[in-house]
Image 1 (cartoon, rainbow, N blue to C red):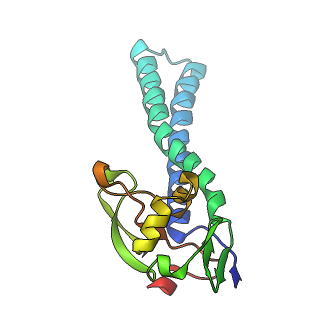
Image 2 (cartoon, one colour; image 1 turned 180 degrees about the vertical axis):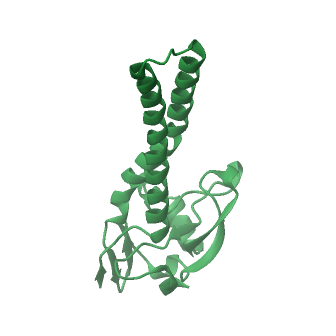
Length: 180
């Protein structure tokens, strides 16, 4: 059975939020520049403090916008992985272009607290399929590193940094409650 892949609702929500933040941030940049320009055109004597303040706002807002812009760009690059079809076959599951992954290599989907991709963010509740012992050996062993990253990210302390889960794929027409 072939199911059309799509990004998850979480990714769509984060992408939309980042776009809103960027639009708001760019609006602040434009407003600061336009304010100084309008004051100058009207003939108001512009003190050096106003220019310094406007430049400071533009620099700080510009630097602050680099973070959401970088994250959005990164998410857009990984979006192509979600476009792959999810294929259910007797010998396993193919998702994000990886597979077939034997059915015995992962457990059923469940909501779990997993360490975030960047450990400092703590834990996040995610829909995942835990890998079995056979799955851990396959994913962390012979599977190419680029393909591992399509399944999920590695978690754990530096001395035990392993791929432990497969992220539940997004499927067109199926929402997250379908996996709970």
